[in-house]
View: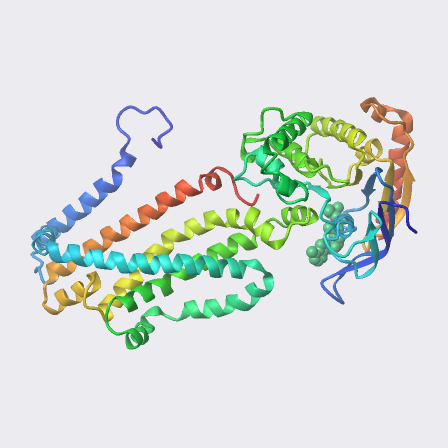
Length: 263
Length: 261
Ligand SMILES: Nc1ncnc2c1ncn2[C@@H]1O[C@H](COP(=O)(O)OP(=O)(O)OP(=O)(O)O)[C@@H](O)[C@H]1O
Ligand SMILES: [Mg+2]
């Protein structure tokens, strides 16, 4: 079964011990190295749980998780993560917030004080990529929600993670900002070629960004459909108005409707 | 400063506290004169002022003494409260185990503990310092541990997925986050420490404002009793204002951002 960068094999997880909530059951999932994967499914089906399993934040009750060929027994200690809630630290400037992972992940951690100027430059470059040029010395509460979410993305990316986990990061944004950030995400993935797992409720988002989409069933969640998206890259945003694009969105929509009805 | 509308004239809110205090004392003075209240029942503010001037050296010396015991107890409470607060906030297991114990400990009225302290350490400053410490450390513990325990779980996930240790999370997030809670608790704690040391002084001490008050009371020197009360009020306000100022200085960000949103 080896090969994938992230390998989730027959995983079940019960929250709160025996008799607790069975969140996911018999989950199988393979994401190749450098692939952009998206996970969609009904609300409460265990998507966030899947993210925590894949990063080792929770241990499966049954089954195994492998990342980069190694069994996951604890937090993977290299994954960049971003959630819907930006959760910036209000006492740090945006730049300092973005640079937080560098204070934790090796080898940056031990190099940071010596090469602070270079790292600061790197963070500022990343901020300008997401459209936050010149906002580095602002505090998070001086930024709009969309700007905070952009800096949240930067924080997840600053240490060049090989695995990027995004849990509905664009969920709370307006349509224009969202589509703009899709393109930012697309370009970043194109450039860095990290493995991405994106949880989303937005099927258009999934189809536009992902190479492979996993559809989950209602709780207890498992993968019911795996759909590869073959559109050539780089994908222009106009793709989202095309007939063949919307056909896939409709197809996924009916899968989710089935999954919900089956619950 | 606080009035946003460009009203003509003077901003009264700045001097309002002084004005109200003045009115209160004036009414007090007037009432004592009009109803001819005897000085050993309720002395007029003018009489209290007289007593303050007459006994100034004693009041001053004993204020210093009370301040000193309060501050010593308060500093001990800060150190103890911070350490215990960090310990309690560190993990849910410790929290679950220690919290009920502390609530029980806090429920014991400290007046009831003072005799024990006096038996152990004798009459003097030590029981006063310890009472101040015992009474003041609880709010610090509660606030610090709350600040630590309410780290956003998502942020904790982000950091743990990066390989952060518990220590990293505490240093980078928990402790900075707990600071506003900590400084907020100092206002309460310093007032409590003050109450503690004065209480202890009235039970068993040979100096301090509490002791002065007891002495004045046994001599039926009501003006002096009130002079001491006034001195206590002034000291209490000074310490509170100091801590409130410190809180503003240290944790400005917490007032401008809505924490934990
Ligand atoms: N820490 C927890 N303790 C107990 N139960 C939990 C915990 N986290 C999640 N659950 C339960 O597990 C199930 C799956 O939760 P999860 O957060 O993974 O869903 P989700 O697919 O991310 O939902 P949404 O789309 O609404 O974000 C839910 O029924 C939830 O109640
Ligand atoms: Mg979720």
